[in-house]
Image 1: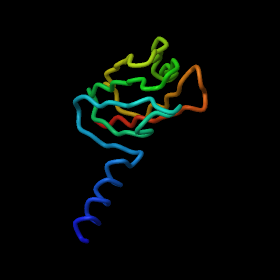
Image 2: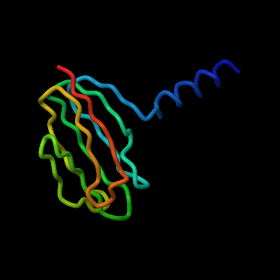
Image 3: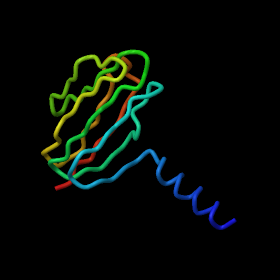
Amino acid sequence: MKKIALFAAACAFALAPRLSLAAGEVTVGIDNFAFTPAEITVKAGAKVVFVNHDDIPHNVVAQEIKLHSKALDTGDSFSFIFDKPGEVVYFCGLHLMMKGKITVTP
C-alpha cells in the first residue's frame, strides 16, 4: 500500500503545473488549448521548446521581449533561448485565453 501511495505522490508532483529546471532545454507542450506546464522557472540561457500537440494552429507571443512565433501546426515546434533574468508572461495570439509564465533566474 505504501508503494502505491508513493507512486501516486510522485505522479502528482510530476504533473504539477509548475516546473523548475536548470539551464538546458525545457519543453512546453500545447494541448487542449493550454500550455503545459503553464509556469516554469529556468536559469538564464535555457532553451524553451514549445510543441503543438493540438489539431489546430497555435502560436507563442510575449510582448515584453518581442517574442512572436509563426502559427504552429500539429507537431510543429518553436524554440527560444531566455537569456535575461525576469518574468515573461506569454500567450497564444490566436486564442488569448491560453497563457503561461516563464521565470528566468540568473
